Every structure is written in C-alpha cells, then in structure tokens.
Image 1 (cartoon, rainbow, N blue to C red):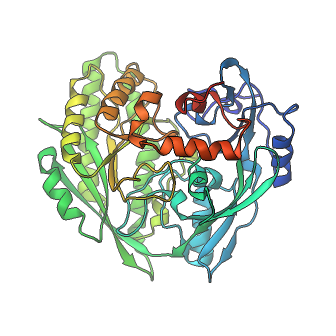
Image 2: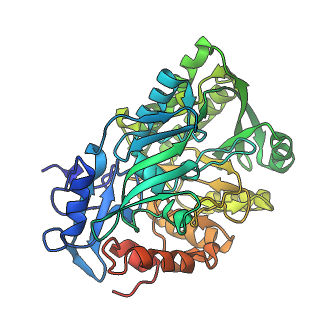
Length: 458
C-alpha cells in the first residue's frame, strides 16, 4: 500500500485508511453502493484527487476515527462516443479530461467549450466538481455547464439516466458525488477553433479602466496577480480571442513552454525559495523570479492561432507540487476588492511563494452550486507551495475576509471552509439539501466534510 492510496495528490489530506475500491464497470459500482454491509458508508468517489479540501474523503460524519468506502474511478474507462449531428460526446466517468480533449480535436475536429487547465481530472469529476476557466463572451467557464446527460449509480445501487431539463438535473451537475456515483457523462462539444493570446502588464490602479477595455465582447480574460511587486502590486492580463478554424501556428510550442513553467518551473523555484535560510533571502529570490516571469509573459508569450486544447496542463508530469485556494466575487465593485486583497496580502507576516491568478467568468445557472449564479464574477486564487509555514494560517484569515466581501467559495478548491463562510450561496444550499435528500435519504454518500458544511446532523 502506498501513501497515494490514502491521500490526495498533494499529500496533505487523508482520504481513506486502506486500499480504495477500483471498479472497472458500472455494475461494479452498483454492487458497491448496493451492499452497505460489505461497503460501509460514507461512499466517496475519487478521480485524480487534485482537490485541496476533504470533499472526497471517506471519513464518517460524527465519528472521525471511522472510515467508509473510497471508490477510485480511474479504471472506469473505455471509448468515447461522438454524435456529430447532436454536437455531443459521451464519455466513461474515469477517462481523463486532457486525453479526451486531445482525442476530440485530433480525431473529430471538435473541442470542449471550456478547456480548463487542470487536465488530469476525470470526466466524472468534471461533471460533478467545481472547475474554472476564463469565459469567452456568450460562453461559460465551468466544465459542468456543458453536461447534457449522465448515468448515475444511485446510493441504493440502481442506475438513473438524467438529462438537461429533468427535475434536479441542475442540482446533480456540480454535486460533488453527493447524489450517487456518475458512471458516464454526455457533454456538449463544438467545432475546434484556434485562439490568439495577447498579454498586457498594468498597475493595480489601472485595473478598473483596463478591464472595461478588455471585456469588449470578444475577449476572455485571465490575470496573473503580483500583490508584492512594486509600490502597490502589478497585474499581467492574458487576453484570449478566437481566431477561427484552419491550420495553427508553429509557435504553439511556446504554449508548451508556458505549461512547463506552471507545471514544473515555478513550483521548483518556489520550493527552492522556501529552503532559504532566512526570510530576507527568500523574499529576494521570489521578487527576482516574479520580475523575470512578468517580463517573459508580457514580451514572450503572445501567440497567434494556437489550439485551446494545448493550454490544458498535464500536472501528472510535474515534479514539485503547489497548492491554491479560490473565491469568486461579483464583477461589479471587484476593482475595490482587488485593491483590498493586495493590501491584505502585503500586511501579512507571511508571503505566498507563487503568483496569484484571477479568472473572469460569465454568469452561469447551469449548476445549483454555481459560484457565478448571481452574475459574472472575477476570482481570487492565491497560489503557493502549500508546505511552507504560514500558508494555512494565511488561508484561514483570507476565508474570513473573502466571506466578508461577499465571495462565493468552491467546495473542492477552497481549503478550511466553515459553514459561516457560505452565506454567498444564499438559499441555494437549502435547495440543494432538499434535492440531495431525495436522492440519498439514508446519507450513504455524505461524509464528515459535507455534513459539517451542509449542517446535516449525524
């Protein structure tokens, strides 16, 4: 037994105390769910385990020493089924997102509308977990928004086929495995189209005016945030625009360099900084690395006609790992929140060791737990190695501050959440709980993490 059997990808959250079940068919999943004596509750499905919270941990509510049943879904694989006329692809839940995206492009000339950077998540997790990518105008930024149908092994071991328009379908999308185990998913797909990528560096003071220019009805916007740079911080915007079909540009190899920097270069540099003998030397290395990165991004990574599929990163090939958090805020007034956020970061005794990021994401009511339910949002995503002293204390303080700013977190991407941090969901959590109980009246899928956040008594 290896530690990877029991922990998440980062190695800081225990998910199970033994060897997970590894079904290879839907019937295997049904057998697990239908036999509560042999496979005790809670039952939790797991994919690549890149979540930075205990959302997938099979720890029992009210009994921290008791474990239920963990299901590793990565062997539930098989061929994809493309329906060109309907514009859909049907995929086994254990297939890996980056592999499916490449197959769609290379074999069928198709793509997902949302090409999230975390390429190693399973398709079941893409349908049921929180994801993000900057939204093109008129499109979404969450992968689950394009789920049009799925097969769900329910907590009693039966199977239900659900599709868009069915009652509770929007609750099942983005439901984190609390309604059952998704075994197969049908996604909407579109014709493959190249994109152009441009970068602009600005000061924090220029953000509000610049963002109005960027959001011009044709541009998707992603931000690299440098809260500690200069007098008040710096921002590098990545502006993506569609460039049509046809052939691509050979300079797309630069996008592979960008992915390598995020996957391996920056984490390795940050971990090296964390090993410095004192904080002054650590800060000096981090400042030098960030200055160099800003110049490379702004002057060396503008690209014409690259495939959006190539922006997806295979983090399994990485060396040193990194950790993050995420909060989403309404676009109206975000410039003020961003300024307060930079100030908050600079006033802490602790300094994060990697650039922070932000995504502009469209209003989206496809999932009941959507973080952009009330309107378009910008996110705040601090990033660090996750191993240095001070990171988790920083996140505890940040959660209180972000909740106070009216932010909405993600259950799989925002560590150290408490029920009091969830008021940004409004009454949607109560609606979600009503739907969850219809699917799982015996709380077969409910673990300690969600029982606490949803205020479900044990």
